[in-house]
Amino acid sequence: MSGVAVRGCVVEARSQRIDGVPGLGPDSTCSTLVLLLAIVRFNRLDLIRLGDGNQGRERTLRSRAVIFHGTGANPGVAWYPWLAKRLADRGFEVEVPHYPELNVEPVAEFLPRVLAAHTFDAHTVLVGHSGGAALLLALLEQARVDQAFLVAGYCTRPNTAQEPVLKREYDWDAIRTNARALYFINSVRDPYGCDDRQGRAMFERLGGTHIVRDDGHFGDYGQDYNDFPLLDRLIETP
Image (cartoon, rainbow, N blue to C red; front, top):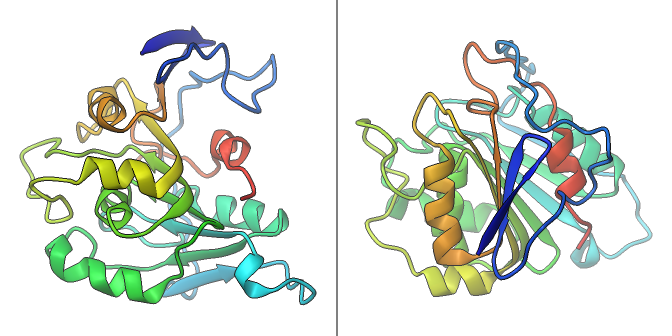
């Protein structure tokens, strides 16, 4: 494993040295300190579905993205609406479901409803933030997808709070097999402890790409983070 500094980022990759983050131009700055959060709310928060409306393609062949919000959040906050629109403009069918029970109910009870509510296949990209990122670990034990992005994710309790979204043990081999590409994006300083050490713990078990920034929790109460160009650049069309 190796790590390099890229304009304020540390990018780690399994068995290779990465000299830059895909899609970043020479003037990109990874260590931009963020302003404080303003929460943008939609009138309807149950589910946001966006698509390009192209009727000429078979549904099973369309690229799909599912964005999972963090604990206590909803589809209308932080960068979720921005990313949903960006991906929809690129031709993805996008889902940003609202799961108030996320990290409230034990994951063993909650996960079956998630698996039943969405389609997961080789044309699917998953994005999870915080508790939503932790959920992806359990989900990826059972569902095969193209890419998975865990933003401010964690695999063990990052602080003293209870974390019903976590499992005691994971089938790391299954997770590794079920995602063609895995990305872990963490900060060196995260107010909840979802920091680069958590990202590295997952990276060491799963490989993939670990990106370390200095951007707090990537959106939170009191931290404005209304867009996420890095994610848009990293996400490939399956």
